[in-house]
Image 1 (cartoon, rainbow, N blue to C red):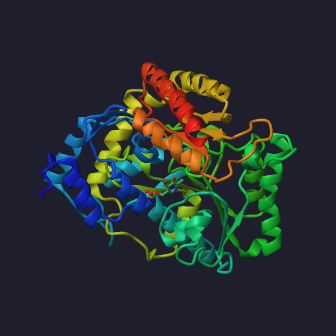
Image 2 (cartoon, helix red, strand yellow):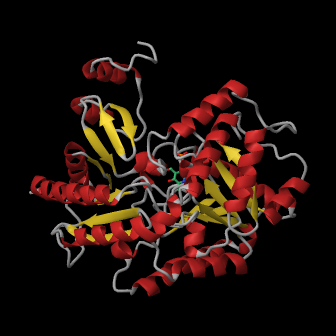
Image 3 (cartoon, rainbow, N blue to C red):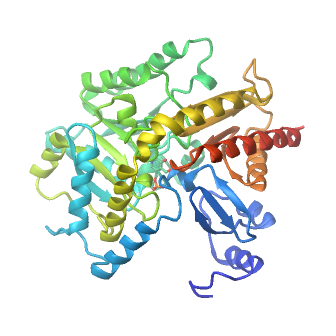
Amino acid sequence: MTPRDNHMPTDELRALDAAHHIHPFSDTAQMRARGARVITQAEGVWLTDSEGNRILDGMAGLWCVNIGYGRTELADVAARQMAQLPYYNTFFMTTHPPAVALSAKLAQIAPGDKNRVFYAGSGSEANETNIRLARHYWHLLGHPEKKTIIARKNGYHGSTMGAASLGGMAGMHAQGGMPIPDIVHIDQPHWWAEGGGMSPEEFGLARARQLEEMIDQLGEDKIAAFIAEPIQGAGGVIIPPETYWPEITRICREHHILLIADEVICGFGRTGHWFGTDYYDLDPDIMTIAKGLSSGYQPIGGSIVRESVAQVIEDGGEFNHGYTYSSHPVAAAVALENIRILEEEKVIDRVRSETAPYLQQKWASLADHPMVGEARMAGLMGALELTPEKASRAKFAEEGAVGLMTRERCFANGLVMRHVGDKMIISPPLVISKEEVDRLIELAWQSLDEGMADAR
Ligand code: PLP
């Protein structure tokens, strides 16, 4: 088989895949029993599989294909850049035009004084960088003991050791001795599941104040930073109550710790603004970016850093950190073209003024389904809480089983909707049309009916 061999029969593809390919976040036994899904092409918001089925991608890949599939401008830019300068690094006091142009553009669209960028190949790598940046920053300021990072349970920051340690996914920590030292976690602001008798506002404040309690317990002089996603994505689209972020901001300022906003999902239009930081009017010191930065067309991530923080790092001599693919010229050129399209086609403005209000209204109607306890959405990211009993917010006996069955039903019906336990989540390409939104809702309702029947 060669890379051009796109027409191999599906059974043969599956057999070769099973023989040679270790899949991320997949249950291999289940996958082999059913056969891996084979996706062969895509256009707009539609995937095509090897059997010719068209599937509406309600997840934009992995929350990343913001401008939709099939934009040949990005392929053209990549081809031109590959012909001109396929690779060079920015180590050892070197640069190249795509890295310069992308950095200047990001400095322009990032809010406030966040105007320096350090590049990585992914969101995980960027969060590794953030651990290094935060600790190095305090070290240079004469506080080497300020190195603990506070993060949140059920947060997601990537799969490398540092990033997965920042994340608060128990299932990940259980495999491989995580978290690494000096990373601690507070509870998430998930009102529907954990709010008990509190109002959302009370609960938001209570959860934010856990940060202050943790700082008091460990000592401000030991804490480097707090990291969080503006809206938790992989944890199940957890939209914090309105009181949460202002209180977190106050606490970070008063206790002199850096605030790192992980914008890997929220960034580049997902909330109807450039960044989740704009959506919540935050002022983080560092923002993690990836995914929508290139709409997933090239692997690229990075850390956008506040000028005053970057200045300390820059004045500290050589920062002994970097990846072979930091500021990769092809990835940078593609990201720049992606941002040009987002801007010139006013994609984010349309999300804010048209698509998100439309989808949100339709999505809310799914709360009428007998199995849906809550239908929440911010921008174009949403979740359904599945429950056997709405009034008590009860859990299913075997957590995640109904979510999994519903996800499989969605796929069979022609819709990608992911499940996180018994939450169903969506994050479609930002270019989804109103007709496609209508179709998404129809398919979701049908799949919920079938998932509910399976559960009986
Ligand atoms: N941060 C957040 C908020 C994410 O959602 C993800 C991936 O889903 C990451 C970081 C890790 O990014 P990557 O998978 O590109 O390493």
